Image (cartoon, rainbow, N blue to C red; front, side):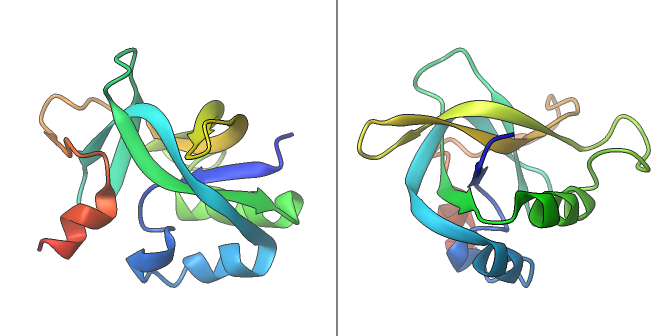
Length: 135
């Protein structure tokens, strides 16, 4: 199991979502990071879909999980991911390679959007906080 989690939406520090408090309690901020994916606006929150295009970069934060056995089940509930949720679930949690601003790469849990994106608006800059600050 990975000891890292990459967040790119409502769980980020400046998104002002109450669920971020769970990260503060059970994880430690490591650094800003990027994940090779396309970012889409779903509602008041985004969804990332892996991309083979290196120009597609999602901006987010990397956390070291201090108590993954406590935090990940809570986050799975928040993301409505895993057993007990109707399929196809909106997100799936997978281990992915993320790149820190230093250039180092680590394997981290990422919640990936798990549905069709054809009717969604892409966030071209890859930074969800930029879009909510412009609204």
